[in-house]
Picture (cartoon, rainbow, N blue to C red):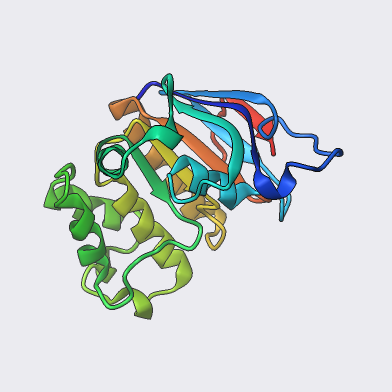
Length: 214
């Protein structure tokens, strides 16, 4: 997938608002593979809803969302499975990690679907993120900031055309935020994928190709 396009798309809940001023909703917005985008939003403007639409979890919107030139409303379940395994990855705001599994198991359970990272790469990423001693720790015994770092490694454990980041550093200090940024930038340059990050305040300090207001 090389391009994501929104044509006059808007969450149903905002469809009747006459005061809506957005670079995304009820507008034409294009995201290209290989570029880095920031979507800035205020709380309650549909940031997580947008991510859910792009990931195919919800369909309560009007307008069009196109992957390349194809309307995602026409995707079959099998096609969505392929897109999520081979093209589109996401770091959810609520992480969606398995609390009863270890940090390493949470990454491996995804990496086995479309083997992308070697075991040594996974270990090296954990060490780089300052959680090298947490590989065997159960997720529900780790801090939220540590879990966010595990969720990043899991998000990288697949082929990617676009990486969605929904409030990825909400519980991280500046140093760990910068480490996550550097890892994402390194993998984006190596694999050529695009990044779409959302934020209602604190955000990664990328040199963004474009910043949009939601």
